[in-house]
Image (tube, rainbow, N blue to C red; front, side, top):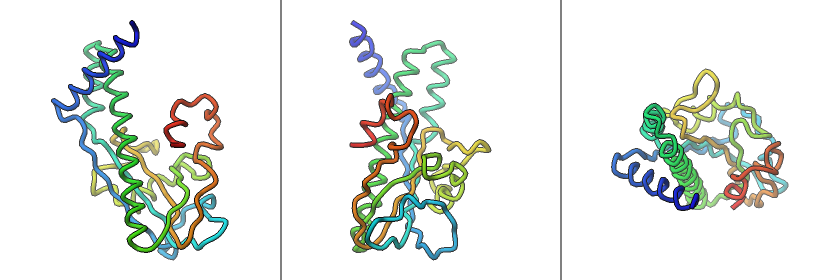
Amino acid sequence: MAGTVQERFRREAEELAEREGLVEVALAHRFVPLDHGEALDTARLTPESGTLTALACGVCTIGPRLERRVSALFAERRMSLALALDAYGNAQLRDAVRRLQDRMQAEARRQGLSMAGELRPGDPGMALEAQPAVLRLAGAERIGVAVTHGLALSPAKSASMVLGVGIDLPPARWSRCDDCPTAPRCRMRETADA
């Protein structure tokens, strides 16, 4: 029975998002040569072999509309629909992240380069304080993503990342989830490792 109710709210949330145009995916990225003059502590991206030549800095968002609608639903005390819509937004953001990664990978291939590893500000291996630099290097202002005083992203349903770019880079033998203290009980780890 619970699955049926959950499914009903999931469908209702998806229909609401589509009807009201609540998801506006936007992507921005830039390959930044290592000699660009910026300093980011991303030692974990240093490959075992090959030559690291640049960092791919990327940012994506689904925009602010969905999070505003979720807040309005909570204010209306429609908690189940609000939670279902928020979960839908999370899934849309995961899809946007994958599209951004695919776009950066395609650009690397066109340039005869390879990519390996991924870090996000706040991950083990990259300080959260790197967030403003990553956004600046990725061109986040072009898509309306900013960093708050607390170093969170705004809109909230946004993500930033840094990947290694270079010549003959081997696949990373680590995941950004490996050293996370919540990894053993994280439901997202399966998605991130896929």
